[in-house]
Length: 172
Image (cartoon, rainbow, N blue to C red; front, top):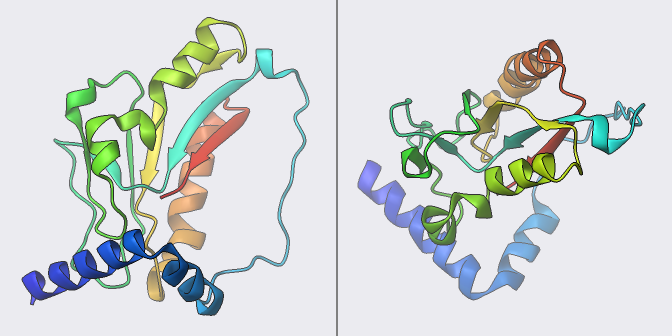
């Protein structure tokens, strides 16, 4: 069963890469979670004084961490935490729902760790958070509840405890 699912996922990923209008058409009919209230908080200090963290939905994790569950067609609502200064060769991507060939060559395509550190070193931001957080962006059905009620609040609490002022989110 697993090889058949991988073939199907690969087929659709290739099809959407070749014909982006098909993905647009799919998105028009897909059901997405639409929150009733978006908790917008304006920055209370200059960007040059902010601690900024990276959060991604690209399925990035360290090679020694458990991969995201690609066997469940509804996805995986868990998250991974790892240091921003992890060696680039230690990053892997477990996500079958987008073409990550470029990101496999340079993790900065989906997780701009080098760019964030540059922004900190040149004073554009106050500092880069030492930890990054990663989710797998393909989350459906019952896992949406787990994401909204468990995983996302857990990461938000971790970021708050670390004194993070701003999050840069990179989607897949």
